[in-house]
Structures are given as C-alpha cells and as structure tokens.
Length: 437
Image (cartoon, rainbow, N blue to C red; front, top):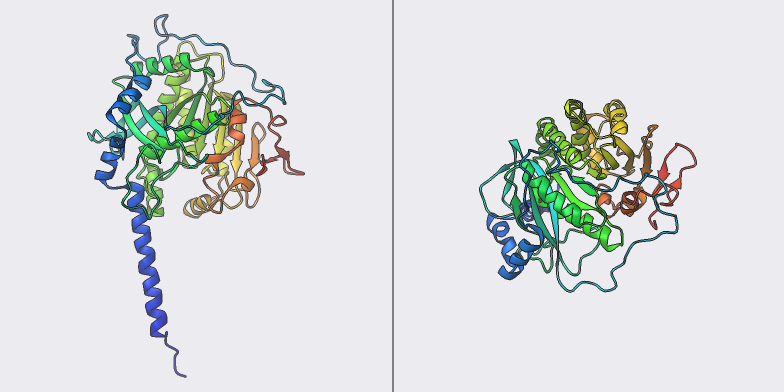
C-alpha cells in the first residue's frame, strides 16, 4: 500500500505559519522588554519642567530620624488613629467618597513606594535601573508613574505590538518617569511617614506582583490599581509595592528560574513587611498579591513571624488588615499548612479564583499539583477566610482579572460580604463575584 505524502502546498503553508508565529512571539518579547534605547528614553517624553514638578510633588527631602527602621523612639514614631473594626465600618448604603466629574486633560502622577531585592544596574533610566537578577541586599525607594488623561480602568496603557515606532510617553501610556532610591531604610520610613500624614485614608496598599514582571511592570500596575480605585471614589491608601527578581518574560521556560529565586527573596519580603508594621503599628496594611506573588508571600510568613518574635515590643494590632490573594499560584496542601499563621496575622483573608485561569493551569502542569487559584474542579475553601469565584469577571486567559476586580476597593473600605453584595453559592461555602458587581 502506497503511503500518502503531505502535499507540498500544505507543508509550505505549515512552515510559513510556524515562521510567522515565531516572528510574532519574538516581536512581542521585544515590545515587552523594549530596547535599551527605548526604555532609556521613555522618561524623556516628559518635559524638563514637568519632571521638575513631579520631583517637587513626590520626592521632597524629608528630615529623617537617626534611628534605624524597626526601632521606635519618640523621634521617629508616628501616631495614627487606631484602625476601625473590619466589618460594618460603613453602612451598606454608604457610597464612594467622590467621583470625578470630568475626564482629566493632563496625565496624573502617582508616587509608588517600593522595596526590592533586584540588582541595581547602574543605568540611570527608571526603566533600566533594576534588572531581573537577584541582589543580596534589600533596597528601598520611591518612583513616580504617570497615568494618561484618557486612561481605561484596568489597563496599563502601552504602545501596541504593531506600533514598533512609538515610544512610551505620559500623554498616552502608563509611564514610569522617575525613580529615587533611598540611602537607608530610615529614609524610606521618613518618606512613607510623610506620605501617610498627607493621605486622608492613612492606610497602606501593598501590591506583590506575580511571574514575568519587570520592575517597571510592577510599578505601573501598582499605580494603575491605586488610581483606578481612587477615581471610582474609594480611597485606596498609599501605594506601596514589593518587587522580587523576575526575568520579565512570559516564556514558560523562565517560570522555574523565577520560582527558584523566591526562597531567598522571602527573607527580604519578610524584612520589608516588618519595617512597615513596626514603624507604623497603627496603620492598616492592605495587601493584594497576584499569582506567584502569593507563593512568595506565604514563604515569607515564617521569617516574618520570627522577626516579630524577636522584637521587644510587638504591636497589639494584627500585622495585616485585608489580604487579597488573587489568582494565587500556591499549592493546596502547602497553603493548608501555612493558612493558620496567615489567619493569625491578618484581620481578614480573601481568596479569588477562576475556573479558566490558563496561567494557573500551566503552573499546575509544571508543579504537578493543584493550585488554590484554580476553581475548575472546585473552589478551595478553608475555615477562617472568604473564598470568591471571580470567573465571571475574567477574560479568556483568566489570569489578569485582578487588574479590574471591582471587589478590591470595597474590600479596602473594610466592607462586609453582605455590603459588597457577593452572591453566596448554594453549596460549597464560597461566594460568587458577579460581572455586574
């Protein structure tokens, strides 16, 4: 019997499609990382006068205490009102504090406070200041991200993949324009303290990013989340982020190298959390951790508890107010063992999962285990936390719904489940976040 051969036209067509796919992947990676010239000049799209204005607005010199972070003395201790109870802070009918009447006509700067253990490159460009490599030191600082006037909620505007000619600019994109590292943790504490004193909410919003994020990606996303919440009328608090080493590429082959850096980074994240809590014991810390950032957060908890145990005068308040675990890339069995410690440190923990989270599916295939962010088989439920199925607000990828999760601003207002109008599942002990929330 004569074997059937593949028609040459079909063979050449398949080869052509494969080559086109490889070209698109390569170009997408190019736009993701950009060229050194592009990123080095990205912040120059803001005029010298505008940069000077941003510098004055967000990075003013602050008199710093002589003591180191972690030591509270009368000279550096800041006093804030004690946090309100988590539930029923506001009546159900209480709405947003303010709503923007007209769209802005100029980009808006957002100051983001940060901690990171990425390597300092020596490049003065904000986009290239930190690499994806692991440093042995924990660094602190502030950066300024601008939000364009015609911003779409949930989006970090960037040049489209087909706009290879266009560079980042603050009139069209969510743009990282300045970065100002701190010489010490005490300088960082002073800067953050001044920011809290000027903030009406006097709370901290801490974002821990996930896999495949550069430092600039994390800063832009933190600013977008804070800005969108504020524009919806909900005070989000002071935006702070922790950025762990990541090569910033969606290539699955980089997942394991990124994950292998987490163990060392967990100690630095623990120190960062300790710095925040000990220096601002009465300031609620609300956390959004995404994807792999949840795994890092869970790894950091034992180190954090050790630092608290060593501290002479531990604060009476729980370390964390609201903890939102979004698309968590954390093993079910591992988290079941970690959860009691997290619950003890937090006022409330809320888990958000999705039934078609393709990013989590890839992680499950790599790690050969179920992740708590996957609700396809079942919604992961533990006594002591709220589990929410967010499938209805996710796109077809199912992994980035955290960028426009309408429940987060309400959570940060410390509203109860009833106030947030989550739908209780008929069975299973979890809640459903509806698309029209």
